[in-house]
Image (cartoon, rainbow, N blue to C red; front, top):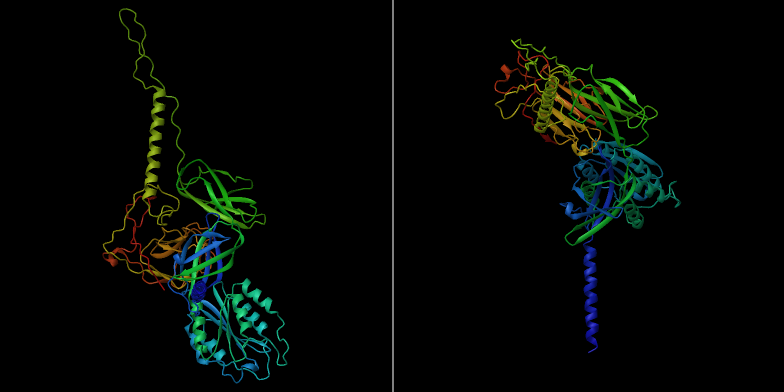
Length: 640
């Protein structure tokens, strides 16, 4: 009778051990490789991007994960993921560190075919470098997209007899070289037996291992360590990999060097980009990422650094698109300030209206001498060293000041009617009552103004791009905003390809190499969703409505829409006037986004184009001051 409880206990213990073992086999290895944060351009807050690798127990990446497979915590608070996608299309910079000490001789450690296969797998946008080391550290090939140069450098590297291995110095040198690459996916692949020593057995490196690991972890550069030879110090290499966010692999009969390279490439190229929005204060914050698929689970912690918010300024008055006349009140407010504001200067038509040095930075502008029409005013905030902190713009409609209504209407003289008998003198009621006339005039003026405002509001609501400034096919800031449009008639469903815009540089690496076709004009560019070409929030120097491509005198021209950071053609700032483009021109939007313009087709007249009119012209009888609105087939495509 006493044996049954013992048997049951042993069975339960066996089941528990098997369950724990199965759970251990199902554990996922999660690594937060790097992180970044982009401030919002119009409010306080950030978009945080985490780059995470998830591999199974065999070191192979898991594919097909989405937002449902991840949980992210910032400072222990759960965050809502806005994106969880594969980042394998982003370029990578990888440095190969090759141990060339005497301990590598006679082991046939380096499989040259495996090295060549690995480097040729890297994309043309990726960068590779090769460093050889023994008692001396040598950069055999600096970072380059010419992977043949790296292959030749690696194939020419040979171990030297009687030489020691300054492992830590070489690793630090590799990390420094990798850190010189643009922000993105960066890694170091170290091939060694893991021993830092001279041929005499003494320590070789001048740097301590702790300094090397702190440098790697602080800059989020993972180190993949590959053990070569029978005397590999596996514990040392495992320690380096784990503390830097990389992985350790041991070349053995079970895992060839080619297989090790395949695992490294798989882990490098199959990361996940996790994005969420936060309104935490600037500074470092802890993040925890949990990944789960089926019965497998893993987690990893990291740090995200939120930069100081830039100065964000916005107009308080006048309202966008409002009708103004006479004295116009200009004022701005600040959502955030990176440093103290010394003054705010207002501009209209490129001319300074004056500076205001005191809060709330309000300026009264007498607009009576300005031509009525669409008007843009700009405000620029400066610090005490007269450095620009922020700028904002506001568009409104400037009207003529209303003419004062007459205040005194004379009445006709009374008429005397003689009779046989004297009669009382009476006043003929044939004249108008002055008070009544003034009242009726004021009421009529109010009805007219209300009708104009309602018409303006209706037109703005129907517009697809309410803040878009009409093309410069009429005098700037002149003409009545209510002039009727002259449409372009086209019986073709598709427009010819006029030009292309290729993304040469972008803070959003996924856009580099993208090509946007210019099938019709005008074509607006910016971060707002109502543009024809839409860039992502990562390119925060690009305005929400940054610039427009349009036709001017038969040429394709670009015009800045009063953006904060400006538009440049071949590194020359354009201002607010259109600049004609030629094939090969470099167009820079803001500080970093760069596009290459290529002209595909010359403008055609209506007779040459047949049914499809590419560019419109105003009719000969169009009154001066009226605008020509171009209604085009706005087509956009993107390809890698």
